Amino acid sequence: MMMRLFNRKGPSGFSASSTAEEVTQGIDATGLTAIVTGASSGIGAETTRVLALRGVHVFMAVRNMAAGTDVKDAIVKEIPTAKVDVLELDLSSLASVRKFASDFTTKGLPLNILINNAGIMASPFMLSKDNIELQFATNHLGHFLLTNLLLDTMKRTAQESGREGRIVNVSSEGHRFTYREGIRFEKLNDQSGYGNFVAYGQSKLANILHANELARHLKEEEGVEITANSLHPGAINTNLFRQEGFVNAIVGFLGKFVFRNVQQGAATTCYVALHPQVKGKTGLYFNDSNIAQPSPHAVDTELARKLWDFSLDLINRLSQNS
Image (cartoon, rainbow, N blue to C red; front, side, top):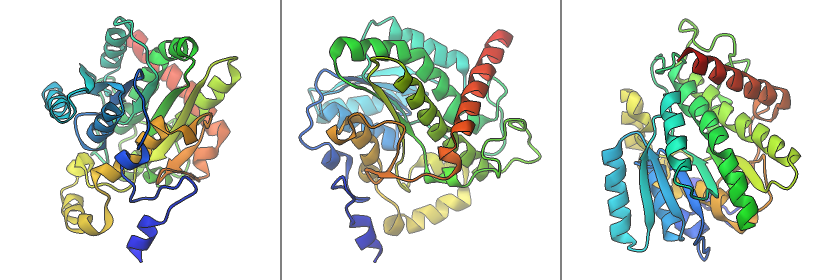
């Protein structure tokens, strides 16, 4: 029964068991440039490999440069024509995000695709380098700033190339399991009410709201052909679970029955980033390489606006303090 559900194809022609290579079969993406955050392991590494396979020049944005270089070397060994570069990025540090964006921008390169993939999951209560709850800081705020800093480059690229730009936020079905109010604006750093899984859910809800509000902003700008979408990659046995020893043990045992492999886990990301079926589609949530319905919080336009303003204000305040 489970395998039948896993293999059931949606309107796109793909299913939960489709791989990243399968959903991009026949697509020639030569000439496109992409940034993939968290590209040194898991679905980020596989996303990088498959984009490179299809001709994309990929910049891997990674915290661990040694691990990133190893992944790059493995990809180039398998695909001699691959164009892959590695740049350092720590999303939990706004200074690191600014440095990365500056380093990339000064190269004078185009940017067609931004994949906000990196994430941490269910970590104990900790604060980032900027004194913000770590999951919110890493999964949402760092990506929010990164996207804003790279947006002008993406707009210029879309106009000059005549090819649609795509921003892809990797969220999770975990966005459904957040705090009752969705985003705890007033209690972001409140350790007493902190739950590691609901705080993860909050950050993943923020990924969807960010994409939706960004899509609205981009639609209102005349002649800007950039889409912004979010997605659930599927339950995948990756090192996201490294914080939870007990969970890790369960994942290891159940993995071969329930979880997707990394090739399947990267499929929806690659589909949303490259597939012609997604052209012109924006402000949507995808699962199993098909359009899906997120939670009521995730489609709350007022909550999306509030998060946007809150994030901008927070970044401005933190920048003044640093």
